[in-house]
Figure 1 (spheres, rainbow, N blue to C red):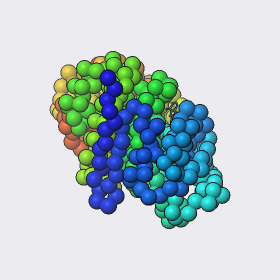
Figure 2 (figure 1 turned 60 degrees about the vertical axis):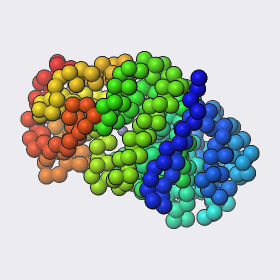
Figure 3 (figure 1 turned 90 degrees about the horizontal axis):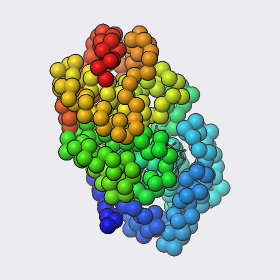
Figure 4 (figure 1 turned 30 degrees about the vertical axis):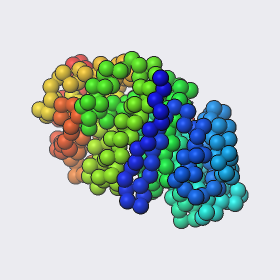
Length: 367
Ligand SMILES: NC(=O)c1ccc[n+]([C@@H]2O[C@H](COP(=O)([O-])OP(=O)(O)OC[C@H]3O[C@@H](n4cnc5c(N)ncnc54)[C@H](O)[C@@H]3O)[C@@H](O)[C@H]2O)c1
Ligand SMILES: [Zn+2]
């Protein structure tokens, strides 16, 4: 039997909003949005890949609930999360007559969500927007929490704003059309939540790993719900990343180094995060925060999710340099999010990054 739809609330005072999660919720999106807002004019941003599957049902449901919808199509790909595409979205929104009484809707993955959210944050000094995430990464991570933005030639996500959505509507049935690679990449972020914030959830993932990997809808709904619940708690405590929210960077320090060294060509973000989590777990053992059994449980789960584990073959020097180029380095020291066993974490400052990397690379065969 299919689960009914479920609703969570992100509690941020007047910026609070619902996250609606279910299979086939796209068909009732008009009803959900009319419950959260009186706005009836929508600039719907998506790309051709997503539009081919989901534009029609979304427009039909919205129109049936009295919304006037203007679709805006942007090209598909991370390279289009750019100032040029943003300018195109502004132009299309003006051409459609969108004013301060209207809103944006992002239908797609993290690229569409981040760019549309930033368009909404800045268009006419800010209009509301709704997130309709259609990738696993977007449903469990990027659509919740209000980080919006675009890339700059100098680096990823360097231009942006905090702008919370009016609502998030996550239809887990949309995950059935994702490529295997995009689906599994999203699972890396799912595992991340369990590793540092919720041991029970980690065990759930272990017990249901094969069902999840096969995209069984009830299992998908449960993981999206749990991840959104965990992320909402973190965001409620630290909306603008003054402290706690940085826990969500678990696995990302090494992950970013891997992405940089491979020039963003070899691995997806999630794959790099999977490799990064394995390194963080090994580092935790080296620092006395856990034992190798934890590394073992992590690697076994990532393997079922078809994610890579091993550091690509660069020298310790190259890793050292890539880690130091991270924007989070302060005066040579690097602060890592390390798991403590499974389900809790600590921020650990590593002063001698070079020595730490030497040891990790040298002992690499233990993975
Ligand atoms: N704002 C945040 O807090 C936050 C957090 C994490 C990541 N991000 C950002 O998210 C982006 C990555 O997001 P992503 O992994 O979703 O990538 P993406 O948006 O590029 O989507 C991946 C691919 O899947 C396609 N697609 C989307 N939904 C589909 C569906 N249901 N069926 C078939 N194909 C579908 C897309 O067109 C694209 O080709 C990055 O730019 C990253 O910086 C933001
Ligand atoms: Zn990530």
